Each structure stands twice: as C-alpha cells, then as structure tokens.
Image (cartoon, rainbow, N blue to C red; front, side):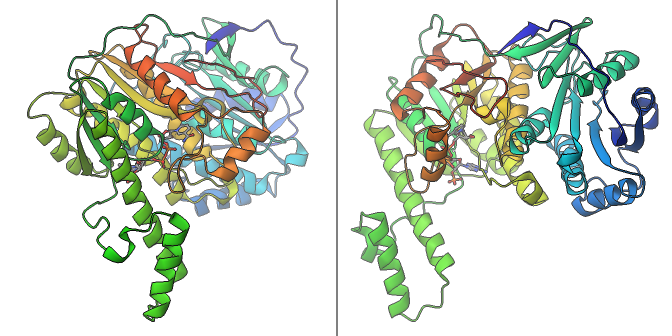
Length: 509
Ligand SMILES: NC(=O)c1ccc[n+]([C@@H]2O[C@H](COP(=O)([O-])OP(=O)(O)OC[C@H]3O[C@@H](n4cnc5c(N)ncnc54)[C@H](OP(=O)(O)O)[C@@H]3O)[C@@H](O)[C@H]2O)c1
C-alpha cells in the first residue's frame, strides 16, 4: 500500500440535521468537535470513556443510545475520537481489548437504534499519522483495531457511510475537528490521513519480490498453528531447509490419537462419521449428534496433524509438536524456555487464529474477544519471549480482511489490523524483520482446517477472487522469509475488490 496525496475535495455543506454521538476520552477532547458539529447543524450527544454507563457491557452500551437519541430526534452519526495517549509502553492485551470492546459495543449499540435510510454515518479517528501504515509514524499511538472493524462495517452495511481518519495524537484539535466535519460531507475516499496539513489516501502498490538472501543455516523455526491449515503447508516447505528443526504449536492434544482400533483403518472421513454414529446407536450411547460430530472432527484434526508432521519429517526436518494454547502465557513460556535451551529461533511464523464469522449485529462480546485474543495476545506472547528476539524474520499471518475489511468479519478484521500495526511497530526495533503477511483466501484443503470452507470459496470465486494455490502460497512464504527489503506489510494473493472501494489488487510472489 502507498500514500497518495488527495487533491482538494469539493465539500458540499453537510446535512448534519439529527443526533450525532461523539465518543471521546473526556469532555475537553470532545469540545472542539462538538462545537464544529453543532455549527454544521448537528444535535450533539457526548459520551466519555469511563463515565457512569459502562461501555464494556454490550447491553448497557446499547441502552445508552436508547436513552439518548430517540427523544431528541433522528440518530444520524457516531464519531469515535482518537486516543491521544502516546503509547511508548509495550503493547498490552488488556488495554488493547478495552479499546476494541468499547468500539464494538458502541458500533453495535448505534446500529441497533440508527436507521440507515436516514443516511447514517460512522466516523473513526485513530492512528499515528502514518496514513494507515504506509508512511513512518509521526507519533506513537496505542494499537487500535478500529479501522479494521469499520472497514468490515462498510462492506457489511453499504448503506452506512463510513469515514476513517488517520491522525497523529499530536495533531491540533481544531484542525482535526475540521477534518472530521469535512470527511462527513465530502464524497472522497473512505480513508483519509493527514500529515503536515496534507491530506492523503491509500492505494495498492504492486511490489514484485526483491532480491533475496540466503536462509539461516540449520534453522530453528517456531510455528504457531503450524500443524493444520495453510500454516502447515508453509511449515512443510520450510522443513526442506537443510538441518531444519521445527517447533510446532497447536491446542489439539494428540495423546489419544487413533486410540480406538476399530476406526484406525477407516480412511474415508464420511465413512468414519457413519461408523462412529452406528457404533453409538448400537451401544445405546446417549451422546448427541453434536457430540459425535465433535468426536469425528477431533479425530480428523488429529489425523491431519499427524499427516502434516509426517510430511515435515519426510521433507527432512526434526519436528516437535506441543499441545499449547498460545494465549496461555505461562504454558507458552514453559515450552519456549525448554525449546530454546539449545538456542533461539531463526524464524517465527504466527499462524494460529480462529474465525467465528457473524454479522456485526449478531456478534457476541465473548466471540469477538476469542477471535481477537488468539491473533493479538498470541502475537504479543510470541514476540515478548526472548526465544524470538533475535529471529531473522517473524511473520505474523494476517489477512486482507484487516486491510480492506470483510463482511461478517469485524472482529477478525480488527485483529488483523492490529497485527499489522504490531508488525510496523516491531519492525526495525528488533534484530530481524517483523512482517504482517496479509493473505488473500487460500484454496480449501481439508474438511476441518482452513478458514475458507468450500461454501466461502464459491463466494470468493463469484466475486472474481482467485484463491491462492497451496503450493504458490507456501512458495510465497519462502520468498518473504528471504526478502531483503524488510517491508512490514505485504498483501499476498489476488484480492480483486469486487467488495472494496479501494480496489485493491496487490500481487506478490
Ligand atoms: N485460509 C485462508 O485462506 C487464510 C486467509 C487469510 C489469512 N489466513 C490466516 O492464516 C492463518 C491460518 O489460517 P487457516 O485457514 O489455516 O486456519 P485453520 O485451519 O483454522 O488453522 C488455524 C491453526 O491455528 C491453531 N490455533 C488456533 N488457536 C490456537 C491457540 N490459541 N493456540 C495455539 N494454536 C491455535 C489451530 O490448531 P488447534 O485447533 O489444534 O489449536 C490450527 O492449527 C490464520 O492466522 C489466518 O488468519 C488464512
């Protein structure tokens, strides 16, 4: 992605008639924004972090809108002001989650009461002045997944006008307030960033792979989520590096793998399910179909893991698998302490992730948290351990969803947006490269793995998106690990944006 200066936009006088909700850190921050909105005809309601109502709770957040808009008039807009805290501290999950949760509840509450037929707008301000991570940051800002969340909203509800402003925490308040009102009124791009008084938007920039360097000799490689899904294919490619040692992390316990002799010989997954059901019925087992389905999935997962680990060993690597939840810092540290007794890791892949796709209005806080936690806390736990500190390359597996949004993936988009920020922040401040690989969708590879299930694959194909071939994806990963250009973000694959306004197409590898 690259920053593109924006020619001055015609800004027709915005029709702000109705209620606009401003969410600010405090009333002092809100004041210049409220004033400009009122001058443009808005009825402004201000809510501040940490006030009596509880933005951490979905129900009280939604109730606040009910109490504050209906009596006063039409609810027209929600403006999420930026965090002015300069974040020099190490990123911490509780703080990140607090901000994400607040944004999620505010947007969900707003959507409950706003009627898109009234021409509603959601504006999100955040950032570090890097114009959405395409330029060096002006000032450090807290990690925020707000842009990812709102990009998803824009695709999910096209009738809602979404505007994103990347502003540094140091930007003057009066100017920022004027930018906000401009953004509401103008018909320009959704994403606008300001630095040194100049407005920019972003555009994709094709980036052919540059010169590569030699891989580390006898590399020690740590891979979260590396036993299944697309990461396992990348791991198998890495396993062919001479003298490679792979340490693979996943939650699935393998200790009872194929414990049941009766089923060991059944290879066909559907036949296996039939046999599991038949045996349960014959034995008068009261297990529900859902429980049997879970047993079947677990068995397939274990088989898939064994298959991948065997393929890695056949490729020549020494492979160790640890059943370890990377969100559990203590458990992860114990594994990494043991594993690095003989040396630190040369490469780290963070592929662990989960998806629980649902429209924003239907998402629960617990599900939103699960999706974000695995990506973000998992990445922080990996990056913060000394075993990864000198790695030549740490590759965080992100998604085009974080960069461009995706329907029903507000949580996943927010999480991947943060992964990308994390990569930008860490890259250059550590011994090696830290990058976020924003993958487009890969081909479906197994009935129990891969986030692109067959139905979803058909939707992507219908949108004109070519799915990444497994061999091509794994080869692209290998190229990235040897790149000399040290870019923090790379969008990989073909993401024709039938769904995105930015019309992103960035092909690498
Ligand atoms: N597939 C795609 O098309 C695609 C596109 C864009 C980005 N990506 C990214 O690529 C990565 C892999 O995606 P995938 O489609 O291959 O997904 P997947 O098949 O669901 O695999 C996810 C892996 O993460 C592991 N995992 C999940 N939570 C974990 C935790 N708390 N601790 C340790 N391991 C955990 C899973 O193993 P256990 O279940 O055993 O824990 C599994 O090995 C993800 O980060 C995803 O965002 C994928």
